[in-house]
Image (cartoon, rainbow, N blue to C red; front, side, top):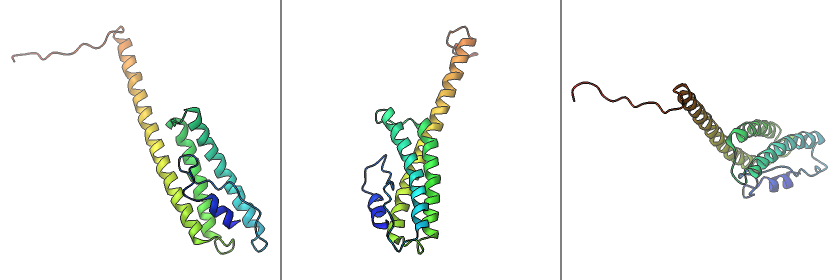
Length: 157
């Protein structure tokens, strides 16, 4: 299981915005506790669901990511990855998880955090722009649809 998981977490995998996916969790070796396999498989499936959601967002935008839709999905992905990383660190001896695999997963999680930060920053900026546009439209409607008059300076020049 660990070897297959390590292969699926390779950082070179070009899946969904550079996110390394741990979807293929094979049956555990005989010496590995079954609870490790079941717990890790559940976490990997949750993670994969959010990765597929992000992929669908990218596909719907024809390669362009909608930050309003991507931000919540990316944050949820980070939550699952934080749980996964905590599980890996807590149970690394019991589940025989190599340190190298944990380090690779931390790097992938770090990249995902950067992506989530950028997506959420873009979503905030988009919301601000929409609010400004709405305020400008309301202002124009209040002035009878005409743009606001520019105030000229008064007094001696």
